[in-house]
Amino acid sequence: MQHLDYLYHPYENARNSTIAKNGMVATSQPLASQAGLSILQKGGNAIDAAIATAAVLTVVEPTSNGIGSDAFALVWTENKLYGLNGSGHSPASISTEEIRNRGYEEIPKFGFEPVTVPGAPGAWAELSRRFGKLPFKDLFAPAIQYAEEGYPISPVLGKFWGMAAKKFRETLKGEEFTHWFDTFAPGGKAPEIGEIWKSEGHAHTLRKIAETHAEDFYNGETADRIDAFSKQYGGFISKEDLASYQPEWVDPISVNYRGYNVWEIPPNGQGLVALSALNMLKGFDILEKESDSTYHKQIEAMKLAFADGEKYIADAPSMEVGINDLLDEDYSAARRSSITEEAGEPEAGVPPKGGTVYLAAADGEGNMVSFIQSNYMGFGSGLVVPGTGVALQNRGHNFTMEQGHANSLEGNKRSYHTIIPGFLTKGDQPVGPFGVMGGFMQPQGHVQVVMNTVDFHLNPQSVLDAPRWQWMKGKTVWVEPNFPKHVAEALARRGHEISVQLETGAFGRGQIIWRDPETGVLYGGTESRTDGTISAY
Image 1: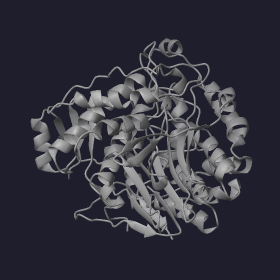
Image 2: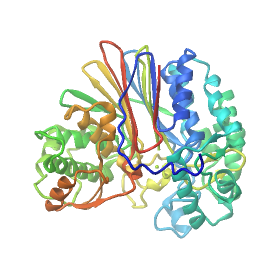
Image 3: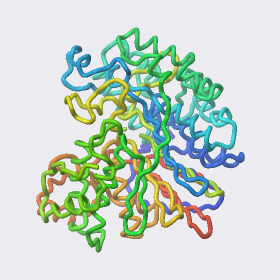
Image 4: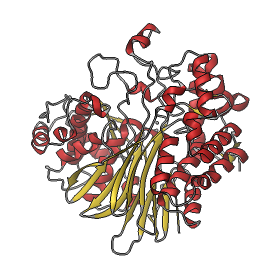
């Protein structure tokens, strides 16, 4: 009924965890999770389901991701955890000098300057090649159908789509941005809640990816279109940049937190920030959840971890400080000891030298996938390649222009990356995938998910429903409207500058699937801050 307000919720409501045995897909969009479930029911495994779900998400949640995104995955299969880095590199021709010649002192958010090579299509193909069960082409049928026939806009999606369109009308003035409006604001406005939206160009590109195992995107017609669009408007990205891209299998990194191993993808991602904070926090006695002492320790550890991350994390070959150095137990203890009873100003230490969609999928055979892909800032760069539905990401905005910095802008380099999938194990058994999307909220969300699970024994749905905090900068901490008032007041007395936010979108959107090692039963939680849904059987 169109006259109803689908964003008005006058009453508190609570969901239960979803429980199933044969398969489960948890995402921020109902149509995407149902598509993943349909793949499982056709005989596909969790890897197939994750790929199909990711493809559908590019259609049904373009406010957060697209074909032009990057992606990362942690895959539990064959009794082992595998990591895939599907982030793309900067164009070969870009440099800080070129950016300054265009009149910028920092890398802009929109336009061709922040565009990097999209890694998601290559990541889909690589996951299927190594671990998939069904033909790659079959995994794209749901996504192509939604792109061709359209689908009705869900509540939170409609909200953020409208906000993005309003911002882009005010911000994006060049001719090169007209294709975004043609694709995502047809008729001059964003589609509203319940309205049908479709994109034939999106369907065409997905079909090409499906038929060529993503080869078309990097060496075929789609690559030619990206190259021509870039050349027309003085962009840096070229067909040669696309052709040289290859996703990378990596060894996941972890710390042991109170008997559980918490796993992340190694840099260039910021998963190391979450692990660093947990390494500090495990040395404290955490006695109760709703205590200013607990939140204070979490926030201060997070600050220190972010300070180190900002200084040291970059594309792995550019890092002067190693992962093991930042996770060194003595270094973590030293950082922990610097936390006082009052809010502090974070500074990087000296270690010893030696905007996103998240989905979780599991099948009845024990395979599990933690998968994340993102344009970075909402719709990304504001650029859509004509006739393709491909919104190019603006991941390059995360580079710094500071010469000599580990994350300084250079050609053929991956930037410091915000999107991070998480995974939990205990002993040699998988517990399951988890993730919280949302820019620099992500490692903070990971820490809160892990502690809510391990320290406070909450079920997966309650883990996600719990009020969240987010450290912003200095002593500024945002909290959600339902954050305990007495705790917020106590934190303020410690010197934290607490700001209650009415808009909860900034606090991330998560999914969780835990697996009982004895029965194989799956327990899922989905995000109450968005249109999150779990499909299971």
